[in-house]
Length: 429
Image (cartoon, rainbow, N blue to C red; front, side, top):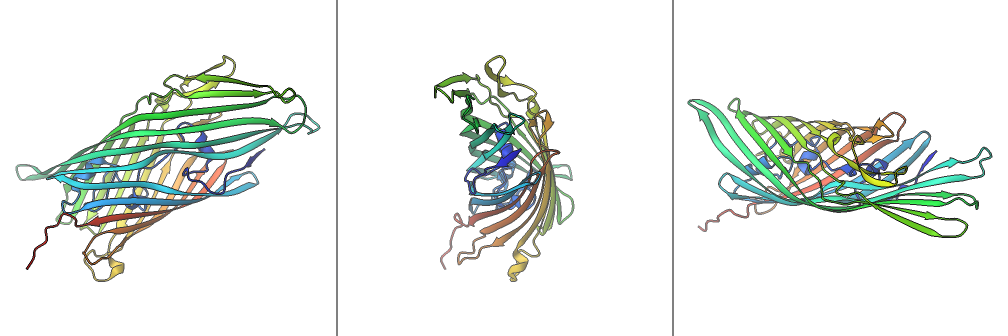
């Protein structure tokens, strides 16, 4: 039987027991305006927002403004296993990002964003005899995660054509990031009696200081005088993280009180996967857009460290992870950007996504995830005629697999995009 002991609140970004596998639960990388549309972004570009999901989009940043974006999130999760239920909540700062025009047709972006999250605390109990006198309880705890500080650039080739045939705009971009963080995971076994049963604790830890590089492309094609089709693609380079994670086994004799520590090290045993994404978006008259993304993360080719009790070694092993796929759909509608009616200037957003798990649990595929989102982009007025926006979105996320823990979460995301005309030249009359 399993009993949850998740903390009531946390700053790690998650309370999920599934974050004990791999590098934890992977962050979506979206900013405030993406989140309301199911997280789409591979084929999106906007002069007033930072879209970190495809660095090619930086090329469309408005030359008159400097954009600064900060995001906050809160989450309430209900865990269910059999007849056992528990609620947990957490909140944290999601991201900080900025963007500006460096030169004609070239934009840049920078920021700090989460890469993965680890945070859980639960226990399971098992009877050792038929009389039920001796009970062994295993407690699982983990915390930590990885972050990335990135710097990216996007470049646009405009008005491409062959004769009278217009080929639209081609954009290229790249992000380079410093990835850092640490994690600690532990499994502790304890007995409910005073019999001579040893207490064993296994503690897994790692410290990461590495890098990440991804590339993006967008091709924007004019279809009619008011309609545009954009095709996008990204590639994220997978590689070894240069980290030597450790496994410390602490054996405590309940009679003598003697403690014995054994430390094992797995050399260069953490890595990130190759990641590919393609996307389409259709924009009509700057009034509405629809889009879709398909993403593949090749975790199946990534080895992860595991302790082999029979051999007494801690080393990287293959076959413990599987490729993850995610489909995202989203739409946005703004009735009239120039209207004096405030409600017509609001951006109304809706979306959804479906993703498969990247880890195995006792030989079975981990839980799949289904999410539905709803969001709004609320214009912020000021005396300088700025175009700042408050992005609010909510998401219902359902994660489940047969004979495993079911998670139902409600997430609230707040993103403030400061978009002011810092570089506009003023005229005195």
